[in-house]
Length: 258
Image (tube, rainbow, N blue to C red; front, top):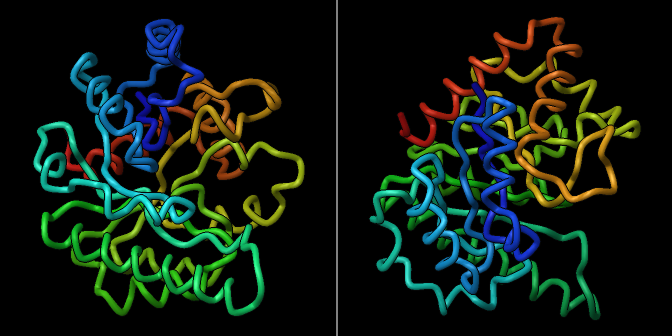
């Protein structure tokens, strides 16, 4: 069985056929789904979906691109919900920064501040973190270490193959591997993957984004985790069943789900 640890089922691209998407996933042995909290404006829909489907869970958080919405998010309302399993997706993303150098620095500082706030909330409520890092590995790593995020652990969503982040495996962090591993230009991730401890691997799609080969260019969905599993199995010279079982066990341990 497989757990898709990062799938945006609350995205509008699933409004018309979510039942079919879930069915196709189950036909491809996807057992459970976790909707990351990236945008407070869609959080209520994520909660509704988690209540409709027994095997769907959600997280609460604010993506680094949406830090201005952090103050609008009522953590108390959602954090203790029976289907809330994590805080995030939170983190740092320096990929698209607009403005002058001073303006860019202000954006970075705000991202850092909101990231720190979410780490503290995760520790307060004893929830693991779902961490988004893009072009900000050093800052993100230092913040996770400084704020002792090891206490709750978490996953580096869509792991960017930066080797300096591998040290976080010893800090109770897991590494989410998705469709990128199937891309022809994913040489860095292909080379780094064998260095990740097996007990720290998780499977994700980030659907509807980052669709794996051979469906790249189409809407992604949880059923396509099978292509991710197959690629990981090939790269690690392991059988598909063992990788599926191992990553499922890892996900259940991190997110405290049965």
